[in-house]
Image (cartoon, rainbow, N blue to C red; front, side, top):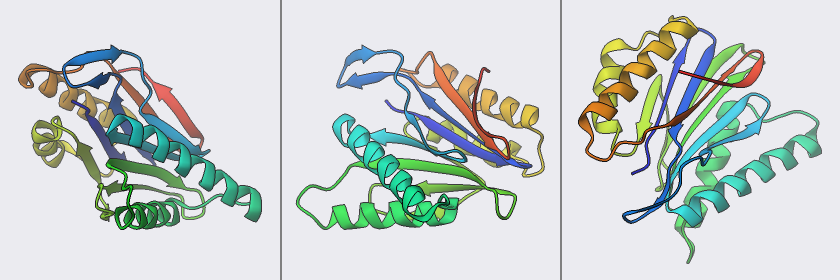
Length: 194
């Protein structure tokens, strides 16, 4: 029952993910952060098998950090998404594939533009204006299609996200109570409350 949403706006990307750690019908934790900060202007929301998600997210975080140390500049969002896709595709062809779905969002400080990438466990990557993973995507994608505005202010983007979360809470049988929401823009990454 993992749910994650992301959308872009005028100069920002909003990424939200539920905070429940569960296995089968058992809720083990209610405050897990499923959004990994990969660099000062790059976020990744992850969902999937519990062991795979943590291991792959930490692997990505460490390798993107290593790239920055070796080259003295961070990866741009498009390059990071391509590297993540390649890593997933390589693992898919190994004996131990990762079962991980990702939303990679960032702010390209060279081009001064936000970027959002939808990545699935098969290594498919697509740049999108909005995205969702999990059962919540069945309800949220139609709302995002209807109300997303690429020129929206941050407040309007948060209102659209709140509308998606409210719809999931109203219509999904087992819906999470809490979400962690992070924004990345020209000033970096910060957590916001809805």
